[in-house]
Length: 489
Ligand SMILES: [Ca+2]
Image (cartoon, rainbow, N blue to C red; front, side, top):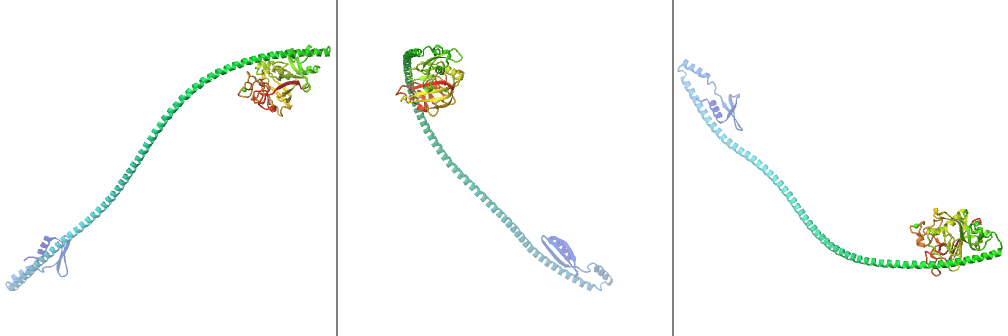
């Protein structure tokens, strides 16, 4: 006889792991089998009194011998029947289990396949979505790359267009420069031609200038010669006049001597006593003419013309002009010592004038005559000349007279200048420009020692005998007299 529990366990072990057994109140035992993810629970009946009764039974056989034999046989038969039933039941159970197992396995396989499929689908879906994402990103990147490429291409195109434009412009500029160069060359050639012509003209002009210069030099020498001739003539004339004047003076003196009788104060007999014409006048000699005088504090004699008629007389004439016979374009030395004809046109001399006016205060009177017969005078109550070291600087004060409301002598006084000594205030040389020696300023409104112009030629002359505030700057006067007299006369 087989124990059904043992068989069952053997079976269960063959298909899985039996891991738990329990007995419940009915005496049945439960078994749990784990097979993969499945757990099976079985309830099996337990055999009762199988061990103990066997010894009891053996004892009863021995005691009763065959009394209970019949009952034993019956019992055995019952047991056999039970065994068969159990075997059948086990077979059924086995079948059932096998059926269930098959189904479970199929189910499990199905589930597994489904799970795998789902997982695979999930993985596939995930892969697909990732692929889609990657694809989308790639597409985006591609689009960006395309955009960049397009933009770069466009820029390249624009750059190439700009380059073409610039090239065109450069070509145009080069053309312009070439044209300008051509023009420049043309102009340079023209300038060279013109310079050549100009040089030729200049050479011609230089030659003409040289010729003119020679001509001018020749003319100048002729003029100088003529001037010398004129001077000779005029000096002859002056000498004759002087002789005439001396003769007249002699005659006058004789007449005077005769008329006066034996007058011991006669100037000509004792010139040491008279330093100027005022003294002569006061001595009783009231006749205008040439007198011999003595420089104050010396025995140096000099001759002077005395005007004894104008404005009370007693005037010592220091300058006289009336006919143009004496050249007043003289040197410093001549103006210092005096020149000309005392009885005619002359300059008394800066040294004598300086000595006289420094010795005592003097009045200066200037009488002027124009070519229309008008006369005028200018008078300065104070007049003096410095010495030669101060360039015979003139000092004037207290102007009055009819020859202009304003003095034509510059104030304050100027230094004396001659053609060879320039002391004026002009960057030019006034004496050389205006002729004569004078107290030029720059060059000032007067010059009574200018060129003597005859009637009809005396206007529009800027280097003539000028007294601006009477007749203007371009009128050359006919006659002038400058004379001095002590203020206390
Ligand atoms: Ca000068």
